[in-house]
Image (cartoon, rainbow over all chains, first blue to last red; front, side):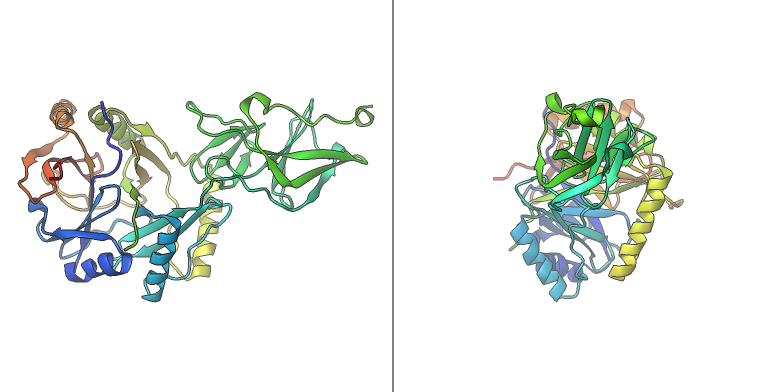
Length: 258
Length: 163
């Protein structure tokens, strides 16, 4: 059976239809479709997005309180996002708070939040393309001495934004950027896994996705050198990996094993 | 005019995450032909505390109000994502007999799915209103109205074919 692809309608409450219609049409820039199109909803103003969803403003004496974390998200192409953002900022609807917020937001995501005249919270989002996992670009970073890393350990090295994974077979340096949509993962030692707060992707200790239906390649890696007993990681180039080679470790030099 | 590509997601507050997930994935999922459960917060207490501290700090820097992270899950029908956030307060719900109201979310269905909706809602003892037929210029041919277990208003609509 065919699945619905997108939402059909979002009904939002407003206290002054004229004022809100002006906001959604002139300030936000949604395409107006008409007034009072829905017989059972009373006085309404309707707008439409490109995917065919209707945004319906219904006039009520008082808007229901739903909490600040309830928001409605609209996606725009990047160039349109900035047009809308600048217009909203110019007209005083938002503070200059659009952000990528590496670590909280995806590196490729630009987003801002605002309130309509009735404090309904809206969120606008654009994605920069193409999606690529960025390298930390901190040059060659000394992660520590070989002996500093116990077998079985995972250590985050903030200076280079990578994890050092130490196994009996050798070392791995993993980029901390999620391969889903480029947020930052954290290591959860209690679960022996990396977790991405943005969209809930999980990866095992060597960076392979943990999922019933995997949709991401493993976390990317960095090249490792062993010099004078130190582990040195080249953070200038992030190296994509596949599930097949995700367990390939940088082997210790013979001298270090002796 | 700027192009708004997509209405991507809308948060719904619920009183019980498991009950909500069951309702959306099993009841609505049967009508709509599938539902993906997604977006689990999977946060430890430490994670929650830390993220709230970060959010408070960012909010203070921006001079805006701080909204507290909720435990959450989420469901997805095709591209329509509904994050389900756990209510952190007891909120007055509309009366049980009120089945049409706002705010409200609607998903599109085919005429066959609308027939199935009546059967599935009845079997699961979900009170509903409709299907209600609408004449042009209403963009929907007909709609059925009901609520989730936390009294969020929902609607399934058969879109009118554009002339």
